[in-house]
Every structure is written in structure tokens, then in C-alpha cells.
Length: 351
Image 1: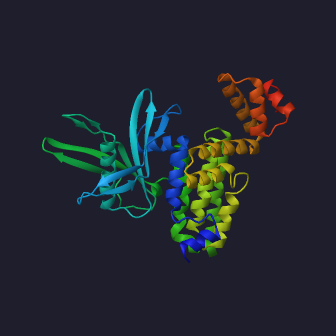
Image 2 (image 1 turned 90 degrees about the horizontal axis):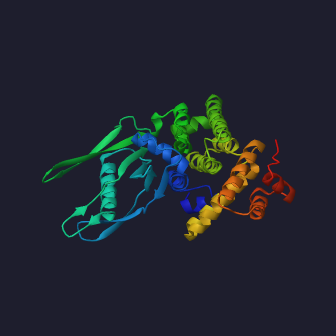
């Protein structure tokens, strides 16, 4: 069946589900990206670290003098305690081979050249920290690679850490807050999808594991280890990746849908994000994020909802927004009545 027919049949289908999930989480969720960077590069960034996304399109000159456009999976900087570091991460869903290192060097060198400081006598280039995420199980792949540059005045080199998703167990994912990798956990079952479809014992193991993932995500959301927005991104990314991995296996696909269903199935911000991606409107993405946060807050538990509203009010008051305006925003974003909004403003909180 052609990709076009599948797209027409179900909007969940994607020809690039892993790239879609990676780029959505990398581009939208700082609280998912920062722990991944900490893990990759032995950093210790906290919640105060600031992520700045950089331009992903670069033009590489080839021997005949023409240029080819390359789009990196991610390029961003992190600012913490007045220190700025730049990072380039690549996500690979195929097998590992040496051509990947060539591609990483092409990208990092072009990034360094694009960001270079030029003078009459000096060209200063700064290479970003580079890392590779392997989604496919690759037991023979190295844990790191090295790129060595030989110059007339000596050698320069830098390491490229390689994270193999399949080497990280479920407990470690949650202990180190590697939520970024959770949507790809379904790949542990890719080679036994056929058995999952017909073997009840295999299905029970699958359901037990995914129920545990959902339980832990819900718990971490309640404990505020996860933002509601990123929780929604993870759930939606899990559903989309799983849908494509289990394509043609109706029973397994249905089980995933049931476990990843519930309150957050198709958040409005995701619809707005897709529309903005198609139209190239950054403001649409911002509107979508706010709609998603508001919808999620409205659907959350009473305790979480109350805490969110308290923080919302505090933030607005710090920005010197009058209570009348805050009341209007509370009514709009949390679907409150006038009396309920006034009660929150006067610290008459439920619970």
C-alpha cells in the first residue's frame, strides 16, 4: 500500500515517525531535552538552564563547487550560570556504520563555519558538542567515537558519545528522567510484533510493561517531575511511534491505544502545532502550546489543578497584571465561573 493511501486512511501514519517524535520533543520540551544532554555529556544542568534552538539548515559545499542543503536533527545551545555551550545531536534509526561519523563531521564543521568569527588574518571556528542517539538495538556499536583532525601543526580531536537506547532499562529511564527516550521503548518489541499479535503470554508481558510506564508517567506528573505540556508530548509521541511500529497488527495497536488513552488523547495544542508546522507560523505553535497547557490543567486532578492555578496567579501578579485581568484569564484558561475565579484570587482554594 502506498504511503499516500496510508496517510489518507489514518492521520497517525507517518513515513518518518522517529524523526517526528525526536524533533517534536527536542524543539518543544526543555525539561525533556536537558536531562538527555546531562546523560550524553555528563553535564549537571538544572531547571534554571536556558535552551536556545539554533538554525538547523546548513549548506555544504561539495567538490564541484555547488552546495547541498543539510538539515541536522538538532542544534541548540544551553546557557547556565553565564556559561554557554552548543550541542548537536543526531538520531539514527538504521544500523550504525562509519558513514554516520562522516555525516556528523560534515554537520559539525559546517555549523562551526557558519558561526565562525572572521577577520583579515584569523578565522576562528568553534565546534559544538556532538552526540549520536541509536534507536535500533546495536550491541556491536561503540559507546563513543572520535573525530581526529590532522593539521600542519598537529592533531586535534573530539569525542562523539553514542547512546544506545536499547541499553537503557525502564528503571534507569525514570531514575535519570530520560523521558525523551520513552516514546521509542516500543522498539524493544519490534522484532516480536508477530508473536505479540497471537501469543497471550507475550501480550500480558507487553500490557504489564506499558501499564507500568503509564503509571510512572502519571505519578511523575503528579509529583511535578514532569510538566503537563511535556507529559502530553510524550503520550502523543508514544502513540504515534507505536502506531507506526505496530502497523498491520491490529490487536497490539489496539492495546497501545487503550493504555495511552484517557484524558490526553489529542490535545488541541498538538493540532495547532501541526497546523503551524504546515503553515510555518511560529505564533500558531505558541498558541497551541498555551491551549494544550490550559486544556490539561482543566482535566487534571483537583490537587494538581489547584497548584497550577496558584502558580498561574503568582506569575501574573509578579508581572504586575491587575487582578481583574487575571480573573479574566482564569475564567478563559481554566473554564472557571466568576465566583470560582474570585475565590482563587482571594485564596479561597478548594481541597
